[in-house]
Image 1: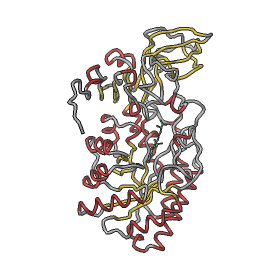
Image 2: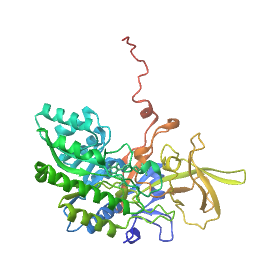
Image 3: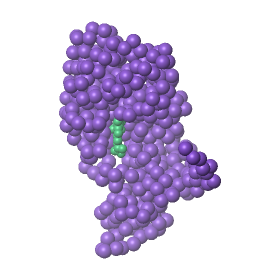
Image 4: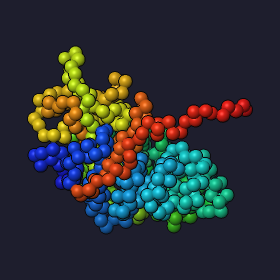
Length: 431
Ligand code: LLP
């Protein structure tokens, strides 16, 4: 099944582009631009589509907050029944503020601090996935200190070669910084299993994001299943406690550059097999799949110009708002909000003083003029969360649409916000 079967919440029915029942032009007029606009219905539809292919497999979907941690979006996912996957104390805080129960939160990340770990232990998260012997030792000590027995998993690097569009988003190859190298995992597990303050409840992997194919993913599952079998056989104490297999995230979406999006049926089969091979409850940590297509970055054209035979469309969003194109060479489809035949092939760029501030080159567009609205599609994941104040640009507003209503779920930053944390008359101290 391809995701083409699902609505993505942004439709034009021959007219101007709308998000669900709300015209994007109305949002731009009321809220200003640039603004992220999210379709709540699309988020729910993506979660429902994933749940549908997992029917009958004991599992839990823990949404990866890193893809989009905006409170309004988290509330949609929590209300729709998702759990949460967090990778920092800040994400743990956000998840809890959005109402996720600690028992619905898993904690990942290659370099968690002692403070973050203590917060997670005190909160009582479902599982802390450990990424090194050093982290295991720290958690064992903190847990003993708190008088708790803490459920932990081991993130194992299954050492497979994944296919996706950029090396920065593959994480499960030999030598990557993530996880415990496959050959060391048994030893760390044995150490953990012997600690009274730790309970080894599972194994974890995340081999990469926007995975084009499932071959490496399936191969990685097989490696983890083999390790699990060995642990159960050779460390009998773990046979009763090892009940979770966390497969991470990585499901792709179609950005419109010839990419295919997720084959959810095939993914469901891999997950089903993972359960059959291990008997474990399967945890999943999708981020992008659930929110990417639910969001656009809405921006207004400021200027047109021609330079060196090239047409430029200069918009009011910049690389500080959406950094994926320059950072990963990522493709985001670009569309004018008003309908129109393509009459222009342009570079769409932002106002930031860097050549890297572009959204796309050679893009067909109607003959847009200053004041016209444009959207960057598929921007709901890794968009606002990766934004910055570079060039002292206030961060964009974020708007959630649900049916024919919309709400500003994060207001546009003000100039005052830019200075909020700075001390204009600092107290000088000497060491
Ligand atoms: N679990 C773990 C441990 C992860 O590291 C990630 C993503 C996920 C789950 C969610 O992966 P997803 O389902 O979204 O593929 N900024 C990049 C993507 C970085 C992904 C990092 N880890 C981008 O804009 O493409």
